[in-house]
Length: 136
Image (cartoon, rainbow, N blue to C red; front, side, top):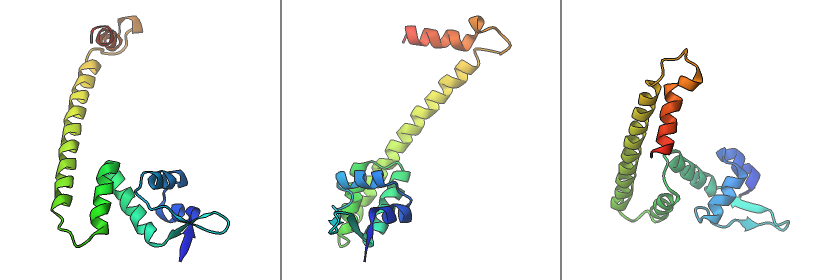
């Protein structure tokens, strides 16, 4: 059974433009075309698109998703490389967390520069932001 792109979008809660993007990126195979040139999708693409969306929700790159789909498409392979990909992604997430924690420290420092109830010409936050911009 085949479905049109609108139905695929509805069933996966994925915008049509995103489905087309995933097709262009090679995450989804090119669709069949009906006599009216409408895109027609196989039911199996519902699960594939949900898989892609779950990966994106975990902030995985398109390249990582392509690799994971490749392993999913060839189930006789061992999952060693899948685990390596996930370990690498965990490391990237850890690095991102550290960057965000440093950002939070900077924001907390900035917030501490102004006690409020001042005029903006004496605001410590605005003063510090100006110094950060002019003195990187």
